Image (cartoon, rainbow, N blue to C red; front, side, top):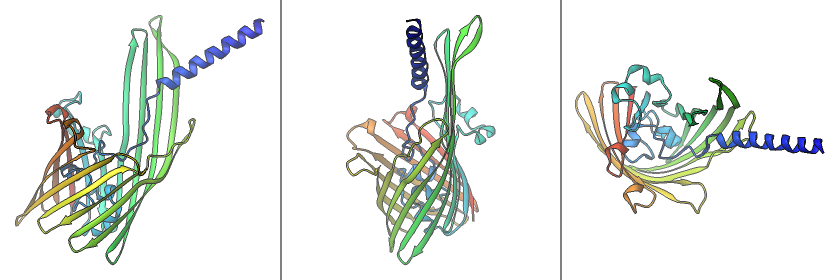
Length: 334
């Protein structure tokens, strides 16, 4: 009888411990290639999902086949700021923050037929206190290093992106006991993985038709948890380029046929001068355009002199300043 009670007690304690650990984990969404995670001020300023954006170090992120249209090498870094951030604008643009993952969107390099990209996909840190006796710390990071190549055959261009993923998940729960914080539960797990994107472009005159399959083949291997696949997504659309302008329409959605589509529209005006170039961009995207909450408006501009270029973009929702996201890309190229 005593053994039965002891086994029941042991079972209950084990169940409660495991349940508290699992429920305390941050919910992980493996759908990363979305418009809610912008990576480039150039693309963000004109609707967020172009088929090809000239001079963008991150053009392979949207369509790796676009590398077949790249004529000059360039390298850049993208940076973000949001009014919802606890930091002031002055603090966020401090030079030391340019090397912090929480502010850096990505580092990219594009060249004819090849590209290298780095993105901190997820960088979440959370300290919470449920009451005066209990507190928890949660940390989840996931990074992506990408290599992309392209090949051109007459009017067709094909692209392939290979991604190496690595990250870490930490969860710590503590209880205050006699003025000392004692560990209730602790979990530390590391992940490594891979993913592949496939892209294609058909070019006829100044018209481009493109398609990209994101994370078509993927796997994230956790050391102590079950392995996961990334959510597959597809993007397709058309783009018209002239000497001094660009206009595109594209659709971004999950790979399933019956799923909500996100519609992107973008426009860019290019003004060339003797020693410099100025660009103005605008666009929008939404899943249905039925309400202000579902519509995102984008605006951007850039200034290039010699090999130095700075791009700035604003993503706005509901026409509220507090909902703005500010993105800057600083790049150098030939």
